[in-house]
Image (cartoon, rainbow, N blue to C red; front, side, top):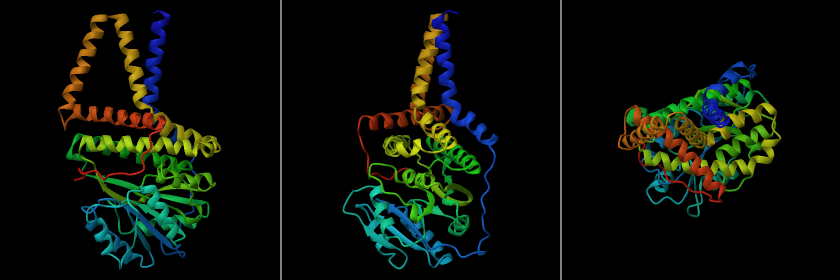
Length: 381
């Protein structure tokens, strides 16, 4: 084997390691780390802190009847719960539906399309609860979610608590199936991070923080990640509660999921740049967690591309005809997968597209493109 062959083989191995590290190596390390227990109180054993539940909506008229009914269940169980909703200039019946539930919630109307980060900041400024709970307009919470969440705040070292997201509709398409698998892995990683210290950020489905820790931030960042990481930066614990359940429907169409991942990735990179000084001051363990679960995964498409290139060059140097046949087979499978919406081949393609969408969002953000507004996916079943 020549020096070039060795270099190509090492590059291929390194790319493979980086690609699987967040899903194999990192979880194994988390399992080996010692647990950090939390003093969790029993429900009703101590007075619970006052609570505000916040969510933003844009053109969510289809989801809101179920959402409002869910909020009524939460309110019936927690009469003192304050509920605030922000309408981001919807063009459907969203504002009318929220306004019609004035006995249940307070509606804040935005000036037009200003984005979720702007809306959440407006709601947080109005909220009076000691604990702020954040969720999404298309997410339903189990009836006991608020009760189960608040008992973790009996421990004064706890500054924020995430819930657990369960996706429905995973069998509707290959895109939904891949998305559901991704989130099961994500939930598992968060469980491991929580057991060993801090979770590295929340998504918007269900999480909470002490209101005193709510930070200031620009509208171009992911408010979920920014707000939840403020807990870690303040020296408090950011935990994940397995018994606090939120439910959401999967995105069924490949196109919807691709656009969503591009948008989230672009905002994630802007958030990373905004938080970088504080990230650098975290403990070594938390920096290791952040790099393993976020930075390495964001560049998954790069590891795939470099690894494929190294593999093809190595195959060419060993057997040119075999390399050509391999490239032709890969192209055929790619084109076939584009025509499919179900099955293993479609699932593999959707996985590759997920990596590509994330990398595209990162590159767009690196070039200075910002995304502040969002559109709800139309293919949630």
